Length: 117
Image (cartoon, rainbow, N blue to C red; front, side):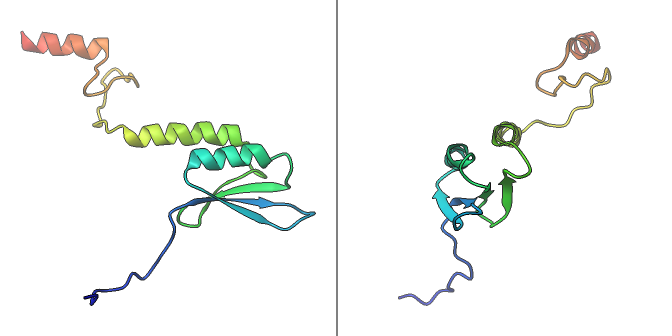
């Protein structure tokens, strides 16, 4: 019994690396993750004119003509870590950028202790 709605869009969920070469035709390699895509770009970047990483939504997120893969990979790792950390916003009265709600700076800790007495 099938009678449901059919999906309107389909995609295979893979990251793609497109290798552009002036002397040969364009090659596209499917990767299971960004780590795999980064490795593919590193392996081929010297032998092609340009390499691009295309995400699951068909957006070009990296192109070797505009940036270095090592710099992009570091920035991607940093962004990935930032997204995985859920921290409540906290405005430190002492403008300490390392002061968070669950990890107060020394000044805020002293204020909290003084407020108890």
